[in-house]
Image (cartoon, rainbow, N blue to C red; front, side):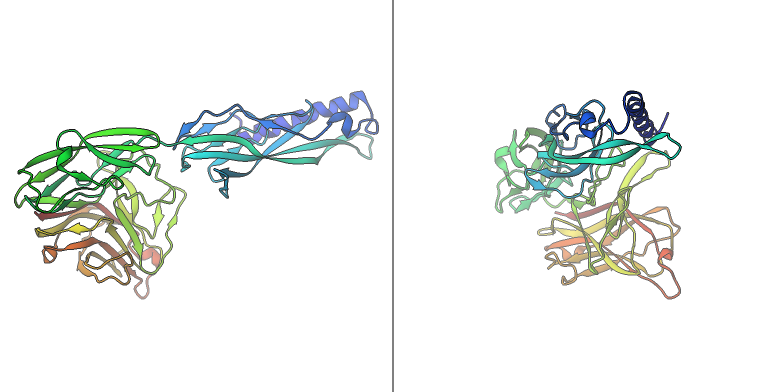
Length: 444
């Protein structure tokens, strides 16, 4: 098959050849004026209407319709875009066929709901017959007009129904008569959304309509049992019900998962642009290292989602960190605070691996703070070192005792620190640190 570029060249020169034949067979260059050939510049541009579509979808438009004489050769270019009347800057998700004006919206886009307009610039060219010294004629391409149609292509992006609602963990413990709050759920779909309980036991619990956090008041009288709760989520696109999406176990002291790293179940490697893809975690660099995202959506200097194949060739995902500077200190923290109130025997269990480079100049800690308020550099941290093992490319399980924080509400996470040793290069350091699982447990 011919390449797009090759076909475009063939199309242009074929049209120019037809024009040249017409010129040489009908009249001399002096007799053939611009007005005779082209008339006025383009005054309108249109496309077949694009039906409204939900957030995350893509499209390929029709070819452009522009009013011009049949022998004119227009070219089309993108010239900006607006959303709900606001200039959106660089066109990162669109491309246009310069010959026929067909516009494509990439499948990997993050356009939010709203009304959009893409500006299209139409250029018309005059192919002038120039006589050479030997008496032969050739065509010279000269720009005649350049017209911008501010609303060349318009379309509407709709809100997308909520696809999933996840509480992590989805089995949580509550003690009889004691205050209880669930983790904040993560939704896939268009935000904002509102939450409500429905079905059996809906009246026994309280849900925050804006966050989806479920709670019991101190002194509640619920009997010891497992309560399977169902949640309905509503956004601009409609309502979706998620039956038995979380179970609250009301019981005396029982070891429960309090928090765990949420790894999205991706069907492919289509990671989001400008997001770290770790829904219930916050990534912070205390030395203001600016994370950078590569063309394959993989991140440097930020805890993020990445993938690997297991022994059976199946892809699985994990949290990854790769260094980018010779001195840096970075945290990955659970976004929600972890409550060990009325709990005991708190602990963290992690499955960690790494690959490439050495461990010299590298430290890995589980960190806990009772006063973290968003700034890692000013918070008071208790750091518990985790001595990662070699060989590389393997995963090992590590158990970290957090019982010193029984009875408190804290921020829990991990910290990596890189200090380039003398005589070493940045490329010598460990390039990958992987966390396959990170679970915080306590007897509650």
